[in-house]
Structures are given as structure tokens and as C-alpha cells.
Image (cartoon, protein in one colour):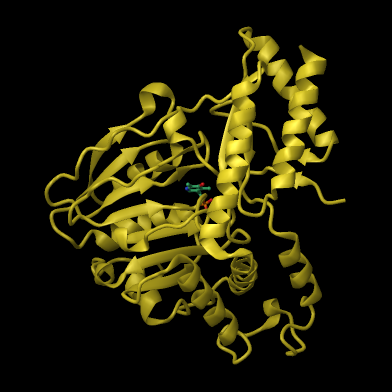
Length: 364
Ligand SMILES: *Cc1c(COP(=O)(O)O)cnc(C)c1O
């Protein structure tokens, strides 16, 4: 039986994608091979990576002066690659807005190579809002934000004005969840395992003029210029992940692309937030104007910490018994969290709301 999987990542994939991958497992495109068995430089694999890139370009509206790279190392490696590759731009400094754990890690990693300017932080309220961002400092090589904050469930509703300083965004948990103007950014990066495919592939979208500034001592595997020159084939790319991303993108295109997806995601999130507003037992800890469409934490209104923890445990367990799984909140936030990425159908959100209504009646 398929469950409704609310995991923050790796997360649910669309059922038609999994079924197609299963059907093509031993013989893909009449090659008599699984994608896992193909040489990455073969005539069989070439159309697969080309199709994935073309679909990503089409669905995200990626301008011609941007390169698309399929790398490994997760979003976390980009925390290092971005400063390493832009460190050649003097003076060595960059701006960061601290909106949560991932944003903080990106800044900490960059501080090994650059001077970090913190241009806003919501740490004072447990990252439950997006702070008003200060402009970049003169000479900053880039300005980094985490567009959707997976753990606490916030999202930038509008982008900071960074003048000519390239805006760099971690879009791991919101890529293709709604339309995004790529031309506003210098670099976008995302680990695939939230909204795009399986773990192991990282998508990097980079404006061409930002390629080629890495200091000469930078390890080859960490250089954008080498990966770009080799078409993501400097070494063996994550072939199977790239193939699955291609299937996910085809599925997304079939649904009407980023605009249609955005509308559906808005509908799903509105439904769930409206339920939280009307609930007497649960509430959202996140400020209204900063609420994520993808990750929705919720906590109970019980004042006693022990009773609250007990209720959380019961909730997660009873939900799982009904096929609503992976609802435990992040250990830093507590409570529960429903991650409702692109692959979560609106029926899953409705099923969760129905369960919460029943739970509320029987436990209060
Ligand atoms: C999950 C996540 C990461 C970490 O991704 P890895 O691929 O595991 O390195 C970084 N940033 C955001 C916003 C995330 O959601």
C-alpha cells in the first residue's frame, strides 16, 4: 500500500514516475539496459541528460547566458563551492541572511574563505520569520539567501534588492514549486531529494560571467569552470538521478509546468494553514507573511511541556497507523511538520486535515 509521505527529504516522488522507472528498469528506450548500467559517455545516455537539462531550462525559463550543472555532494557542498569559486573576486567578502540552520551552515562554511557580512537574522525568534534584509556591503562577491527554510517552514515572499551584487539562493526545498525569475539570480542550487528526484544529484544554475573565478589551488572537482567545460562529465555524473529528474520534469510539464504547480501548491498550503487557524489544538509557529508553501510545522497549544511531548508522540504514531507518515517535527523545532512538496497530492493534505480533526475531537 502507498502511504501519504510527509517526509522533509528524501521525500515522496510522483507515483507515475516510479511506475515508469520500474517499467524501464531492465530496458530503457530499447537499449536492453538499465540507465544504471550505461556508460555516461554512451549514445544511450546522452539523450537522457540532454532531455533533463532541456526540460529544466524550459520549465524554469532559464536564460541562455546561464549554465546548468548536475553535480554531487548535495546542497551542502555548494556551501563551499560558491565561496571557493567566487573567492577570486576581490575583496573577499559576501553577504548572508541568517534565516535558519541551512542558511547558518552556508555562512559558516563560507567564512573559511571569505569575510562574512550578516545582513539580517531571525535568530531572536527561533527563525520563525524572514527578516527585513539590509543591502550588501560594498565589494561583496555575492549575497546569499535560503529561499525556503525547510526546518522552520519560512519562505522569502519577495527577493532582497542587491543592486549589482549577484544574488545566490539555496532552493533545495522549493525548486519548481512555483514560478521563479532566474534572471534575478547569479547562482541557484538545489539538492534533488526534496522536490526533484532522488538524493545524490545537485542541480546548479549559474550565470556564465560567474564561472572562472576560482583560485588556481581549488580542487578540480570543486570548480564550476571544469564542470561547465565538460558538460557535467568531468567525472561520472549521478546518471540514474539525472534520469529520474528527467522523468519528474516530464511529469511536471504534463501538469502544466511551474505556474500550474504553484497554483496547486498555494491551494494545498492555504487549505492546511486555514485548518491550523481554525484548530483549537494546533497552531503554526511561523509568522503569517513568511509562511512556506512546502514545509508546514505545527505545534499543539497545550501549555505543559510534558503533556505536549506526549501528545506529539501519540499524534505521529496514530497518523502513521493511518498511512500518514513522517510527520515528526525537526528536533530543533519540536511538534510536527508536514512537508507537502510537488509530489504530494491535494488528497494527501485533505487526508491529514481529516485525521487532525478526528484526533482533536478524541484527545481533548
Ligand atoms: C536539505 C537541505 C539542505 C541540505 O542538503 P544536502 O543535499 O543534504 O546537502 C540544504 N539546504 C536546504 C534548504 C535544505 O532543505
